[in-house]
Image (cartoon, rainbow, N blue to C red; front, side, top):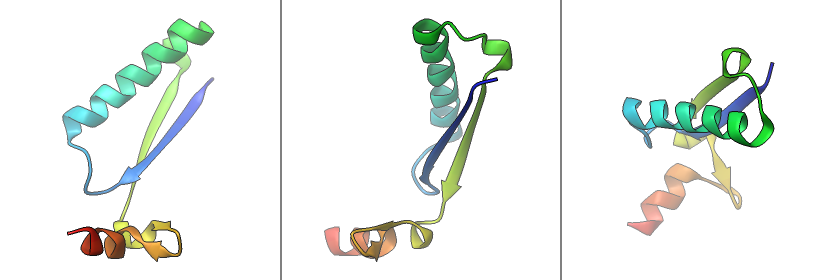
Length: 67
């Protein structure tokens, strides 16, 4: 049973976009690796930007500087 875990920041994607990710990843594994879609699991974890760090600072802080 293939298991795919996608992590994104909580503020970034609509329900429709997440549904497209799940469908697209499923199709990719079916087409490239010949996996059975009935046994394929895709999980999207949404992480608060305060809990996601890049280069020693939170995404929240980085986005404030970018504005």
